Length: 356
Image (cartoon, rainbow, N blue to C red):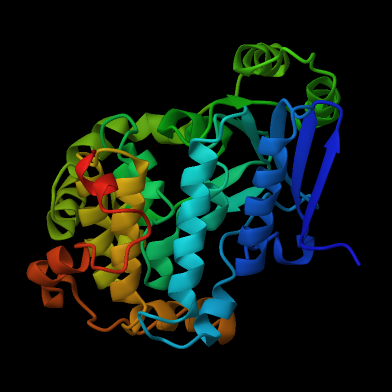
């Protein structure tokens, strides 16, 4: 039987195909290991000049981590959930520094863990079907997998807006935010694959980039751009309460909608997510940001909101989570700061945090 990750080499192209289309290729722990082994194989194969990541089916590259399995796992800071996140974050960092050109096709739905294995690639391709999001605050979690590190590099406060609302980006918005590089029509993806497979032996990143540019098309409008002034002003605050106050003061339909969206999210996750975003601005690199993501995950894995969010979203599907605590005022700033401090249980060696 085919596995959940299909690995093959054709000419100069090493392909990694996520193969759980019925689950929009949601990422399991076993799939993380399979992708890592594929990178071992392609790194060692001199005939493979470029690696391509795609998802089977038409619904999306990857809808995120398999949160149902995390819901069912023991709720402890030393359980299988932490093992999954540790290995997932290591894979994200490996993709970012992979020695051969790595192309990720972010077609269809790409969320959470799907962002982690694609948005850190050297070449990130979106299509007219792309819908990309880091919606974790809606299930009592935070934008992890280095997502906060990417969003904080977006122009001004657009990344903060997408992190706290969890809203979807289209192709143009993903490029504007820095989640992707260029847009290819779905109809041209077979041409891309054939051209990558036919790359000459001396091809490298420059040749891959030239090929992608030759196939790319303008991504179309980025609707969020029409609200840049408001977003940059309101989301510049360092407290979620102040962001909501600024949106209320503005009073425009867009501001009211954004505030209403944020108000449905976990207060704990919102405060932790904003702190992650601000901390990512001064992180010395991706590994340091991922280490902080891991510390946040350790805190949330023993709290109620992550599981309540999953219950409301995919178990009972009532879409009415009962957050604890229920208000932003009840979430201690001191607790938030403490939750972001890495412990002895790390993803990477300690020097990654000091930039050494």
